[in-house]
Amino acid sequence: MYNIDTYGKPRLSSEAALQFPRLVDYISTIGHRHEWNDPQERKPMAMELVQGLEHVVRRDEPLANYSWFRLGGIADYFAEPTNTDELSLLVRRFRAAEMPIRILGGGSNVLISRPIVAGLVIHLATPDLRVAGHSLVAGAGAKLGHVIATAVREGLGGLEALVGIPGTVGGALRRNAASQGNDIGQWTGEVTVMTREGLVEKRNSEQLLFGYGHSNLDEMAILGGRFDLEPGDPSELTRRMQKNWIVKRARQPVGDLGHGRIFADPHGLTASELVEQAGMRNVEQGGARVSDRDANFIVTQPGATSDDILRLIERIREQVTMKLGLELELQLDVWH
Ligand SMILES: Cc1cc2nc3c(=O)[nH]c(=O)nc-3n(C[C@H](O)[C@H](O)[C@H](O)COP(=O)(O)OP(=O)(O)OC[C@H]3O[C@@H](n4cnc5c(N)ncnc54)[C@H](O)[C@@H]3O)c2cc1C
Image (cartoon, rainbow, N blue to C red; front, side, top):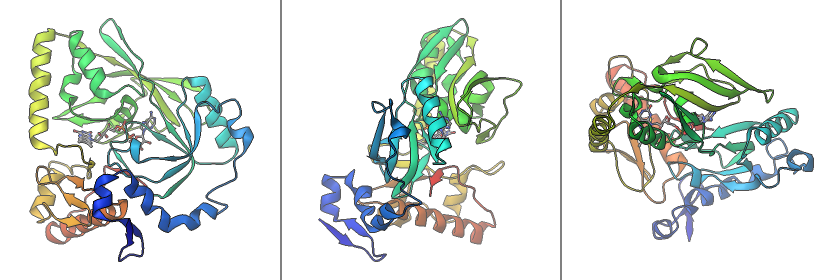
């Protein structure tokens, strides 16, 4: 069912990969099995870590299902807390045990390249959403698309420019999701966070800083945000949202296969144009390829591995530096 590739790693045959796409990255972990036994990486199951939280914590969870690339290793511990008390308890216990903690939202901006993700991965998926006057209050796990559609339906304008950006409110706030000159930060009035000590705190607009591709929300977790919007006519907002959606869909890769946006746009230029000018459009590496629609996206085919994507990213960077004298910065978060 799988062969050993030129790098000495197991790779699913293309026939098997087509049948079992989710297995692809799982199989790729086999070549790294030794890491399971590394005591630094994989501490024994400690009952006190999960006691009372067994209903929200799982062991050895394959992460490919949670990643937009449909790739990813296995989380040592994986939790989907249903409230802030559970989240706080998890944060405090895993921090006390000096185990790493990572947060996962919609998985549209992460490449999970590690075969085993040590410590705890917290998947924030609680989709709370409510309208409060001219504001929308959304939990970190709410899908951005759902938040935008609700705002438009309620006659609240501003966020419709961000339509088509996948992922959750938490992920969008973390890196200040932006499109067509608009960003989520400009509409954010307040954010609730959990600190590394497991405390819930609020950050108001004066404490918040949003820039291109980043924010100062670097606490343990973003729990949700309040977006202060402009009243508008729902029909007009719907028309604007649909127009933005059509433009975005025409430019970006479509289809069910995994894909991701790779580089930040350098000032005044777009990463897509630079990648194209460097002659990298459509270039392939194993099962990964630079998109022909937008050269700032990598699309994957069945059988692709995280290594294919990482090698392709390196090749693109080298070519852009060599031919155009510019350094491209990653926008994608890579979990090495
Ligand atoms: C087809 C496609 C189109 C895209 N178009 C755009 C675009 O136009 N503009 C744009 O800005 N981006 C775009 N992106 C990138 C991506 O969708 C955004 O960055 C998105 O906001 C990520 O949200 P997420 O929930 O998927 O985050 P994830 O991928 O789950 O996480 C991203 C990072 O945020 C952290 N994080 C997630 N949730 C939380 C939380 N609650 N608390 C603390 N940290 C958290 C994670 O640890 C990780 O480091 C696109 C991606 C794809 C695949």
